Amino acid sequence: MQVADRKTAMVVSAHSADFVWRAGGAIALYAERGWDVTVICLSFGERGESAKLWREPGMTLEKVKANRKEEATRAAQILGAKVIFFDVGDYPMRIPDSVLYELAALYRTIRPEFVLTHARKDPYNFDHPLVSHAAQQARIVAQAHGHEPGTAVIGAPPVFLFEPHQPEQCAWKPQVLLDITPVWPKKFDAFKAMNAQEHLWHYYERVALQRGVQASRNSNKAIKYGEGYERVFPQVTEELA
Image (cartoon, rainbow, N blue to C red; front, side, top):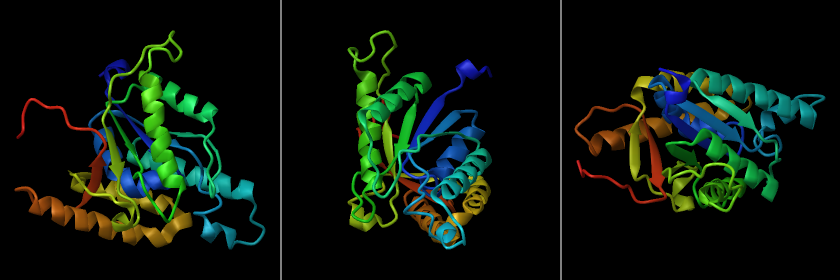
C-alpha cells in the first residue's frame, strides 16, 4: 500500500500521556490496520502531571519536558503512531490563535478520517476541555473556504471524545465501545513507557476491563478490553446494523 493511499486518523492530546491512557487502544488498532495515525500533544504535562519527576533532586522544568517528550515518543512508537509536540505549557494551558491555525493546517495536511480528543467538560483539569474546544474549533477553521484559500478545505471528519479520568463528573457518556482486546498488550506496553505516571497504569487497566465487560453486554461478542468514546456529531450511515 502506498503511503498516499493510506487512511489517516488524528489524536489531539492536552498532555504527553493523555493519548496513551485514553486512546492507546484505538491508535494501536488502526495502526495495525495500516492507517497513518498522528498524535498531537499540546504540552508535555510538565507542571501538573509530572509529580514523580519533580520529587527527584535537581529537577528543572526543561529536564521534566525532555523526560516527558522521550516517554511520549516511545509510547507513540509502541502504538505505531507519529507524534507532534507543540509545547504550549500546562497548568494553566493557554492556546493562542497561532496554535489554532497550526492545528487547522494539520487538519488540511493530514486530512483525517476521524479525530479523537478530550471530553468537553472536566472540573478537575481545565486543560482538557480547552484542548477539546481547540481541536473542534480548528476542524471548523479547516473547513472554511475563506481560510487560506490556497489550500484545500477538509470534509467533516467525525470527532470522538475519549474517556476522562472521572467520567461521571465530566458529563461524559460512552456512546461507542471499541474492542481493543487484540492490541491490549501494546497499549499496556505504552503505559509502561510513561514512567512518570506509573500510578495510573493499573487504574487504566481496570477502566479497559470495565469497558470490555460493557462492550460484551452490549454485543454478542466476548470482549475483554475496551475503550469508550462519546460522539460529537451524528453518525451518517446507510445501514443501522
